[in-house]
Every structure is written in structure tokens, then in C-alpha cells.
Image 1 (tube, rainbow, N blue to C red):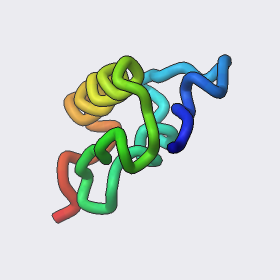
Image 2 (image 1 turned 180 degrees about the vertical axis):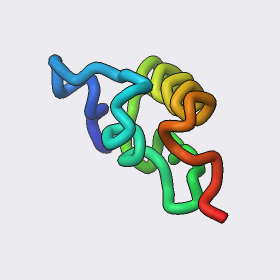
Image 3 (image 1 turned 45 degrees about the vertical axis):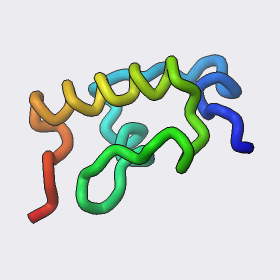
Length: 66
């Protein structure tokens, strides 16, 4: 089982303005990967989904690619 990236990296913060970090947890179509894919824990998966949704609204990352 993979360990949560955010739990292992103590200084990693989920921020909606960090588009590069958020794109790591999305596929090429703009969908959010499930927790099993990257091994994020439930707490950080909720925070990550919220940050991705905020970044989409602020037009930092696209909703879809087409």
C-alpha cells in the first residue's frame, strides 16, 4: 500500500494556487484521481479535491482538455 504523499512530506501544503502540485493528482482529461491511485489518505483526499475545485473556478487549471 502506498503512503500518503502529504502525510509523509510534513512541509507539503495543499494550496489551490499550486497548480503544478494539483496536476499530479489529475489525469490528462482533468479528472481527479481516486485515493487508491496515489495512496492519499481520506483527510488529504478531501482537501485535495476541494483545492482542485477552487483552482478550476479560479481558472488556474482547466475543467476538461477538449
